[in-house]
Length: 248
Image: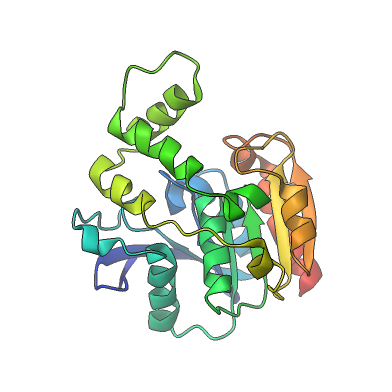
């Protein structure tokens, strides 16, 4: 584990594994690099395929700082932090991948002018990028009311995940206000080769096929699972490693 400074100097952490072509892996909301990328073996498989895997924890997540100052969460703050990480690591040639919120952040980075060699958008659909604040509003309700939801409801599942991962509700509530949508016209201008990777039963962030269709240089791969389970499947890391090798 290493530390790096976020856009405002916040103490954020990053883990690395392997050697070779750098690949930045961005995790999902309420998760961490350990949860999304290391626990189920994806990072190890990708590293074994010849990549230097770089896994930061977003602010308000994992082992990174979770400030309570609203000024620490300007629009696109997560993209700004990853830009700071890339600068501090001195990366010039690299690839980038993200799951769910990590995919959203990857798209924001591309929209802001980042030029990786390749990008992987996992657990993400078109509406999750172009849509308004409905998804963020759903999670705000959950972090503000962590109990009392009907058993089996989407809110109950989300609340259990928040509790399981020890999420700081104040910090995440502020973070949710920093999300920025990406218009479809911007998506259509992204020239970076992209893999859209999604569970075949995952509709949480809209349509993955529609996202792949909107991007000018994208491939679509569907694997078993839904939004919560696809990232745990062995096919997840295998699909990423195979696409990177194919595109090398």
